[in-house]
Image (cartoon, rainbow, N blue to C red; front, side, top):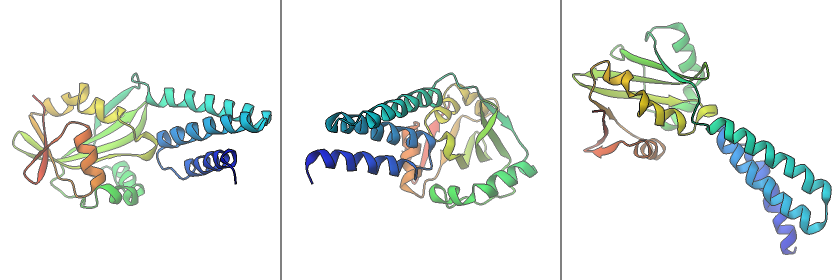
Length: 202
């Protein structure tokens, strides 16, 4: 096996791996890298069909990534009753995925603060919390795999934080029991505070 073949195998492995990604954004990125390497591979072996096909795939991935990562997505937050049938169905359908990052979440009667996060008119995630004076204890902050990028969180805890402050909250408190959740909280601006993470809203 020479180095040119290795280039081809790497490209093939990345394309195959992209189909195993739960996050659509991650799938696009891995597929883009794989197709770009395939373009190089096609040029090295003089296989123009391989080169042209993967140029088209790479271009399609760039277009889709720009659409999925654009900052002008219409994001809205809607208050929803904790007993709403839609919420129960949504959480049930995503239960397995929720357990991978926030396994400690279990619906409770005290979860009176429930907000559905929508993107471009479609449900993208949900935030559920328990009020404690001017603090909101975040019990669940979940985004579906198709929308798992930084756009929703950046908006919700930035320009969209009025959904919290208008309800009288000045701080958010969250507990993380997995490295995935800890990394997420730190990425969006929460800071460690004892055995929890906090975000000041004002």
